Length: 157
Length: 432
Image 1 (cartoon, rainbow over the protein chains, first blue to last red):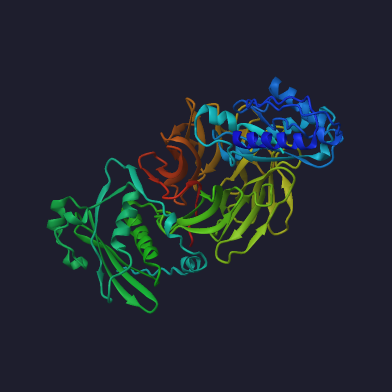
Image 2: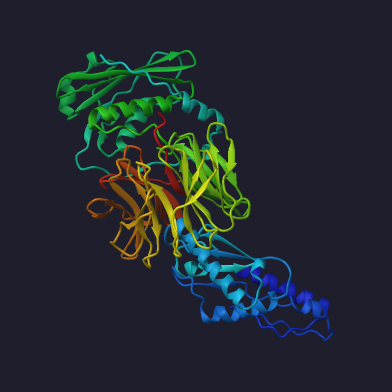
């Protein structure tokens, strides 16, 4: 997962340079990579998507409550989604603990919590699609607590 | 003398439809047995045809009996003689070995297959219990062996054998760096594993129809979870649901006419019953919590299911006629995915005890719970049609494997896969 974030950011660097845009959005992922502001040529259509926001939010065991840091991130997502066209998929996931069918329901409950928060921020509910994979698509294999923590997540796609 | 001929036509048809995958076998490892298993000698059978048989039928019978935990097959090396008929059995020799029963048998070729005549001899009673016959097609030597093992097991223990049953399970492998999922069908001993269907997206929750001809399951192949039913003989497949949200946990009613399932189209997961003849869906639960994992009581009049309406996942019973819901489990803070024994008396579930997920049984009347397993991350218990054993999924290292335990916890064995992770075993019903 980290690898894909990194390549994503690299790609954005190239895009940012070629498009000649600027952005002040910060990325609060653990992966701190500096995006150098390129020379200023205004192109407002590109700035909206220039720097990707972290698109994964995490949860505690058997919980679907949004953490404060998650809320901050989701507010930024909501700012971008408002007025934007197209459907966003909210993919809910669970860790390996507990039964598969119950975890499918838990993944949906997490994705619903994200959806409800985004709707409160003014995002059109019709543009949000919730899907749960339960524990069927772990981000990380293994039974360590760190792997499990990475798997209790909602991915915003 | 009692004679019985069993036709194995259904299994033959299954074998024709599904290609055998040689690399996907599960291998039985016995972990724990009963304290006082009955010593039984299955003597190598006589073969009156030409060449060598593709399977050692008497060895397969011994392995079946051994897996039950109730019988200890006498090793071939310990046998003083290989009698072919009951008349050739020396009671004194076998008694000295401590053998209680001897099985003799004769395999004969017949048109397009084989005929096995086999005899069960009681050594201490010094009498023949029965002679029976089983016939099968050219590729059915294992079916013949399992059917004979069923007859021997029932005569000795009084419990109907389930050695000729099968299971469906999910296998996950890596193909070109991507996970690949398959719905697999194998004999209950793990042999003759073959692929029912392969998927590039997750597949889960396989469940047998009571006549053993179909499975229902959840597939993500459309990009979201949907419930399918598939005929194992013809390969014909039908998508049953495509609702927004969850479409999960299908289980057939005992008469096969309905499918209980979970849909979240109303906003949160609720139990529904689909009438397969009319296509009509009936909502059975109304609660803002998670209601999931429905399973039928054998009389078809109520469902057991998991709900966190009390704050934590616990098991409840829903009476279909009245809609009344009663909580069944009170021990522990996580009880889920209930299955009911064929006699309707015992609940089997995933139970968290001291932070560990195990398989437990509960006597429905007394509420008394008992933990059966001591492995790790145990889930998806599925009970044999005779109610003696259950199959479940667990982890060994980071690998998903299948394992079995008797409902009295006395017998344990595991079925590690030679390839990939395996999970969600569903034990078939009897095929007759």
